[in-house]
Image (cartoon, rainbow, N blue to C red; front, side):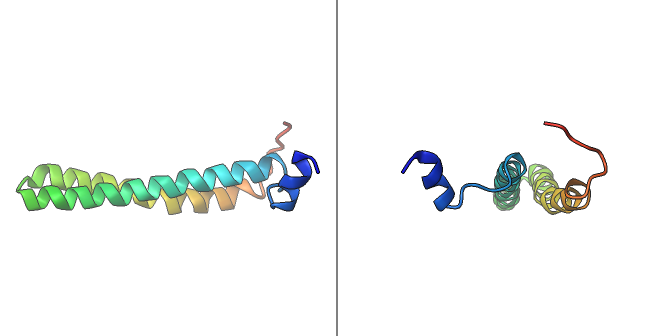
Length: 89
């Protein structure tokens, strides 16, 4: 059995480039969400240490990073799947 057949049996073969792009995009968004949550936790740590200015900036930055993920996911679902712009790759 060659490598391509093994990959297809493992479920790695999706809809070509679109499927691979979707997997990579989901991974990037998951990592961005985790980073956003960690920045918010770090802001709480700074608040505990008594630096409210850095804490406020960290919490706001973490919230922006973490909430950008669902917004971008929603926009990709709206505009990405049924796009009227043809893409020839």
